[in-house]
Image (cartoon, rainbow, N blue to C red; front, side):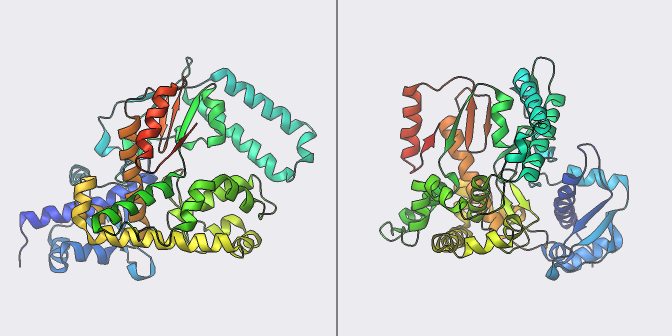
Length: 427
């Protein structure tokens, strides 16, 4: 048996996809010799006989330790020579990791310059040092946790100052992930918590889509109802989601009061609800963190602590909302998965491309990743369509930050266009 040039190109394409994911853990110019690969998945995608033959006659990697996809362990592979690395980087640039080291497909994107308020940052840092030295911190609800929070803020802002020039220009190299969102290589504004962004920007105005995760999913659900002629019944089973979109501040405040011994419980609740929107399980190994566009390794139960986890689970509204989040995600995933032609029509990607993007570390198709893909692609399309021509300091996923206030007339125009989609914007 022999293999064809086309089969070998397929082999290079598949292996390069797994290799590129290893670049997240290395510097922009470093090519690691070791990477992980779900071997069973790779053999199935390439063809077992072809894969084994190429590995025997013309391999570009060798297996160091053999893992098992079924129990979540990938095999560890080693690139055999430098030439092979170059082949990997030159082939199949269609799919990449969604993390900040991904630069191959976006090398020609222009650098973005974000202006920061250096005096404001320095003043905030000095005030934070003064707070740590004073007795005021002892009178906070959780002095130790609050102190750590202040120290963390100082460290982040010091890093911002080290990243800008004397004029306050912070250079960002953008890239667009396969999920649709724009990220930046290295340390960037996306690494700055939302509470610190006013410190970084100084005077500014921020406009956010309201409860965008859930509002956009309701938009997609409405689209399904229109396509399938079931508009009257499509809203059944979404009452908690619609209530959250309408009254999210009241709901967050009430749930935050259930938490004990945590700093900034409102922010924790917001993070929990956003993560549930992306399909996170309370006791799973990880959860989706929307702020970084990726899964974190600790579960929501670990994030909350056992006491707070139990208190939230016992809340009737939260339990029903949590189940509704899972059901809504399942409906969207199953529908779009069964209609691959819509993926091409709406997002301009083939189902094969999307399937590769949504492979988990265990080598399986991840419904949660697919749900994230659907949401983030739709979010980007909406933000580009509505705010594409708006002068701004920066766009951060579902929000834009401007140096000057948007005129009332223009803001009404934005709200009208978003309102046609069932989405609102707040300043």
